Image 1 (spheres, rainbow, N blue to C red):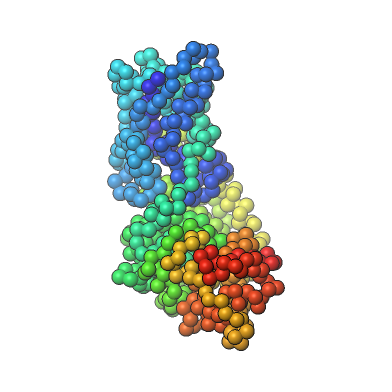
Image 2: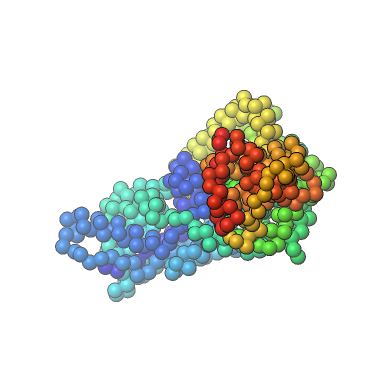
Length: 575
């Protein structure tokens, strides 16, 4: 049997990328920011749906005696986007990947607040091919919108079989409760996630992040160091961040240009690539700023050491320019008294920022508002900004429902009730979090101060065994007694903390090569030395010599390979 797959691209995008972690099975299974480490294998989607249909055909009496396999002859996607939508956004990247997997992507331009004619275009194409001889036997609709019901009924009247594939999070009940519009049970994508969403291969991940001199890890670290070093470790204005990145030179470029070239700017990078590392807050429309001021606020999310270490391990290689930059990189080398001028001038704005609104057409720009202490309203009115949903059109209400991950079906009163309920729930969550934040504020400040001290030396490691990588260079074995006298207490504690931090992040055990690269990528305890590894070599001669002097903290499991290609294993005795 020949099948054609008709996909409501806009519905599919919002269903896969909703912000509601409590309802979205993709977020629950793969975590927030999953698009950075996993991808949808679009090539297998038609096969998976056909396999589910064949299972139903084999089990139902209606199709008894029919052994003809089902194969998708053509897959068509219908969607739209605004003209200025970022081409590197998750949304546009998704449709490019579908096109590369031989889907026919029909992209229309969105004008105004809501998309127009996309659903009509899909319905027209489905009915058109239903009248073309031998075009298809089975029409598969991937959507959850009940607006397609008339087209489904007419398609069946043309003698074609109908199957609906959808997700429970965004499927109208009419599609799965009305038997007269389909010939098969609904195929739920939630049951196919393990085969549909796969990890991004390391080589592909590296190519995605390697358009310039700087890897994602280095960009994350530079941003984390600057934002985390702000006065009182509070929010930092994006203008200060941009000015700081522009001041950091790397080869014939600077960090700001690298960010624009590789990730389409600071906002896109923070929202998509570093969403687990930073909180981002946008001021409301009544902030009193000028029409040309599009700046926003950024803050580090607590302890970021493990996130950076994990990103370092995913980094397959460093460019020559990046290696030279990391060897010479010091936080205080670039930060000065004028680094946070905009933050200080606009510090009152962040205290009066209401609940954020996402600017533009991209649902990708998820905003996490967690600075609850700074959002206290003096008049005691903590509710989100009031919006009169009754003044909006049905199309606008549906668009709001899509953005919030709510069902888009129903009459206007039902849509308004749904949005009002979501607003009340959001208000209750904010109130609860504020109370928790106030109760633990003192303890949180103490913990934040401790984390700031430790995170300033956040390390970096990689599991690649690359011979030519300067971070993986084997150290010569030397007698510890010849060098132990030159090491002071501060250096010893600094090296111990770095090695402990990396071993803990690696599960208590790691190779000497990884530890060496980790030390090479982190700063020294005193000025003048380029890295912690350089200090260790000057004071102790080798990593093995240092570890032997601290047998109470570290265990060397195998020394035979020292100086060779693989080094030896190090274990932390007390996790």
